[in-house]
Image (cartoon, rainbow, N blue to C red; front, side, top):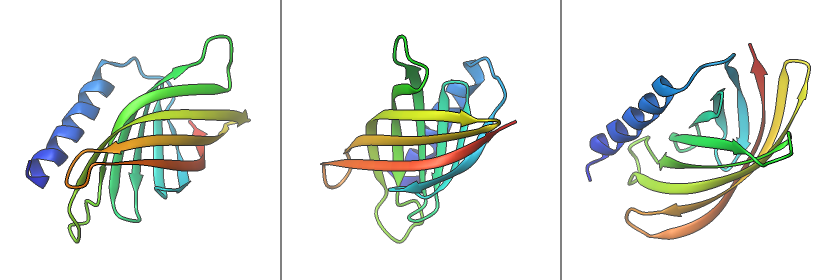
Length: 134
């Protein structure tokens, strides 16, 4: 699938998901790790823009029952969007923990990812970061 079509497909899916969700106060912050960049969360939808290889991620998150600090989710990732390498598409799971200190949300995540284009591979990725809740 051409790179432009993949980019449009992921952006359209993210916007469709966001438009159907009831929005609360957004959280905006930074993430460091496999993808270092900007991380935004609206309710149970998380979007990341990695600045290293220019990547875009979108995940739907769910809380584990009877716990307020642990969550899991499913989503996708477009990687290597900078144009100097082949674009990669991955489906992934997300397992994370977070805590709040006033309006700051600290989080850490493990993200097993299955890359589907060119080289089919499985990678364990991880990020940590902080977001500010408006």
